[in-house]
Image 1: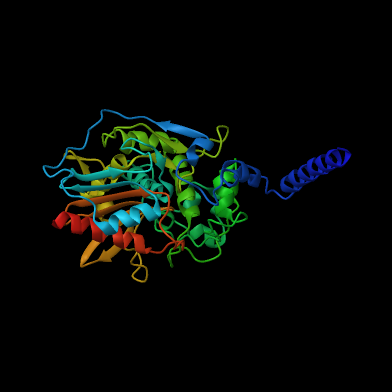
Image 2: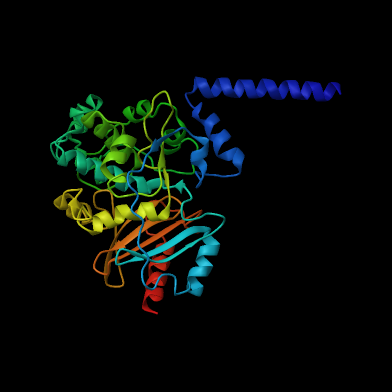
Length: 383
């Protein structure tokens, strides 16, 4: 018994010392990481982790349900699709044809209205809100310096960084896009209670506007710019600009760093469902129009879904671009295989949400699952 008491005492002392060290080295965010992610059996962010964090609500306006296609759910999933859905833990797979729900299925206890984390699909929304802010005159243009809104970036190379550079991922900052390293800035940003402090500590080490480099920090900085420019919180700006006008059927949540600081995790973390996410893809498919009303400037939409750099044809302004089977797709993408994939010529939108994108965890690359989700959707459509 004495041995157990001594052991317990030393464990408590060691834990106490560890906590002191974490605070002393400014890595106390790891305490939150352990509590919310690692102790739940996960090694990275997961679909329903939003329940572990602070969130701000985004309300709906007048719901506009998607119509059902005349051939709604008349075709079964292909065997290949069934296999990949099971292997990768798909929770939603939806095909929208001619603006009508052609096929939908949900798995693993999730339903059509179930919320799950968008992860980096949120980046497309943030870029669109930048376009909206330009359209409304809050931001002059894509070429306006970031330093006009965030004076921290007023000197040296940082002074050359523009709002458009943030949207197209060419800021030149020293951001490290490492999801599985507990000591990376990406991990810190996900768990730190003061996200603004983290972001203002970034350094611009390469000339902005020259080379594409995928960096979630660019989108986070962009959101901070938008809030400074508009005087509105991002979740409210999303609500009034897109969520209500597009007739979303479900209210949603956007994670914030803390209730006290109230800064959205702009590079990720809108918790919603497949069919409400799909509306944003439809908006860009239709050149910024919704039910005949111009919600977003068509010239901005056209620019968003074209590459900024010839050397990096996979990315535009907040959207991923993929050429496959002679077709040009643009898409929203998230960390665990969250996709809204749009082919405007065929008037097709494919949505897939799930727990995993497969064994390939490489960042900023087109993983094999994307090819499969597209190919199998078209095989089903051709039956």
